[in-house]
Structure formats: structure tokens, C-alpha cells
Length: 287
Ligand SMILES: NC(=O)c1ccc[n+]([C@@H]2O[C@H](COP(=O)([O-])OP(=O)(O)OC[C@H]3O[C@@H](n4cnc5c(N)ncnc54)[C@H](OP(=O)(O)O)[C@@H]3O)[C@@H](O)[C@H]2O)c1
Image (tube, rainbow, N blue to C red):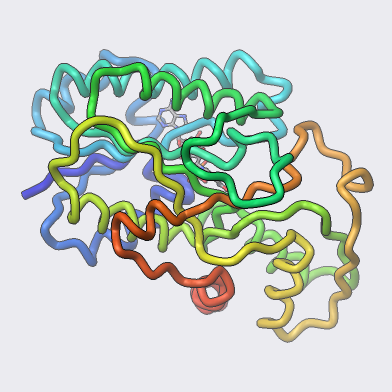
């Protein structure tokens, strides 16, 4: 039986893995997170890997506070790099494959068509730099690994745009949402399903590959908020605003749509549109 360790298990994506794991009965799952295991400290991991023969580590653990990262440069880089370099060292010792989660923030957002997996990275903020550097650690390691980039994650879990807007639409008469940044929303449950399906299709892959996975279609935060409103019974008014009128510590990519063509072709996928995925997420949130 294939044994899979999911790190960052209490985060948004980690919890999504816990939910969809039940659909993959041929896999045995292990889940770890802080405070039990700090992945920055390699020694904490030896007993686990000695006791369990792990085939795959899906690394969802990361420092993900994009604005806070601008003030906490060292902590962000240290966390996101150490976790990955520790996992790479352990992968060489214990022979497991890694699926490393990465982000649209590795790109600068100046494109006008979806980013391909082989385009050069050029992050514009500390968080994006830490994710790009983590990718580089993987690319330099002599291991078997997939780097899976995704964007605009939403789900019933953790902190995300859909949950924030859902709350605001219920509690405010009027809200402002940025209308000049485009991206592809991704349902964390669909991402988790894709990764597990990919592992079941290619359990013996070798070398290092980069994949992109998002739901299909692209939108702006404003249109995304309007789509959430359309699914709810609320009179709250949503005003479109410009990025300049919504100051934040970290610069956001203006356009961060990822091309998923390679992923769709290699794994013969038919991903949901973000609109369909949103409906499913809202059903879960309302219950
Ligand atoms: N959210 C998005 O929109 C998005 C978009 C693109 C890519 N991604 C990537 O997708 C992955 C999962 O994101 P997410 O939204 O699920 O993030 P999340 O909710 O912030 O979850 C990350 C988890 O990692 C844990 N963690 C942090 N430092 C750790 C350490 N040293 N040792 C062990 N665990 C540690 C966190 O614990 P604490 O909470 O206790 O710190 C948290 O439970 C990340 O790699 C992220 O960069 C996310």
C-alpha cells in the first residue's frame, strides 16, 4: 500500500487532503503539523521516517502570510527554505518522492497570457521569493519530485477569500473589492484530488517536473466576489476598486493565471470550472 505523509495538515490544503483522502482507499495517509512536528528541525523527523516506510511526502507546510512576510523576511525565507531542504535531505536518506506545493506568486504578474511551467520566475514580494527559492532547492536536489504551482486557493477551511467575502456579505451593507488583478481561483479539494490522482497514475515517476493546477477559467477578485454574492441571498453592494485604492504591504501580481495545459494532457484531466467549484464550496459553507 502506498504510504503518503501530508505536512501542514491543519492548514487549508492539509484539511482538504484529510477530507478527500477517504476517496483513495489504496493509500495509507499520515498527517503532521505544528506544534507536534516542526519541519525546520530535521532531527524531529528521523523517528517518524525510521518507524514508517513513506513513499510520498506532500508538502503543504509553509509560511503563507503574504503581507506579514514583508516585515518578517528572515522568518519567511528560513521557514520556507529550511522545510524544503530538510525534506530533500530526508528524501535522499529514506527514498520517498516529494510533491512540493508552490504558487503563482513566483511570477511577476506582468504577463497577458497564462504562465507556462517553463517560464522564468520573477517574484515581486518576499513570500513569492521564498516560494521560488524553495522551488530552486528542489530543482537542485538529486531526488524525485513534483513542484505543483497553484493560485487563489479557496475551501471551507482556514482563511481564504471565499470565506472572508461570505462573512462580509452577511454582515456589511457595502464592500470594496479590487477589480484590476486577474487570476484563477482553485478549490483546495479539487487540488488535493488532482495530486492524489496524479500519484495513483504515476507512482513510479522519476526526476523532477513542474505542474500547474487551477480550476478552469480566470477572473478578477471583484468578479469572484460578485459570483459569491449571486449564490447568496444578500443586498450587500460590491464596489469595484483599483489596487492603488486598497493599500497592502505586499505587492500582488496583476495577472497570475497559470497554464494547466501540460497537467491536463499528461494526466488526462477534465478540471471543474471555478464557478462550479465555488458552488460546491458554498454548499459546504452554508451547511
Ligand atoms: N492559500 C493560497 O491561496 C495558495 C496559493 C498558492 C499556493 N499556495 C501554497 O499551498 C500550500 C498550502 O497552503 P495553505 O493555504 O494550506 O496554507 P496554510 O493554511 O497557511 O497552511 C500551512 C500549514 O503549514 C504549517 N507550518 C508552518 N510552518 C511549519 C513548520 N515549520 N513545520 C510544520 N508545519 C508548519 C502551518 O502551521 P501554523 O498555522 O501553526 O503556522 C499551517 O498549518 C503552501 O505551500 C502555499 O504556499 C497557497
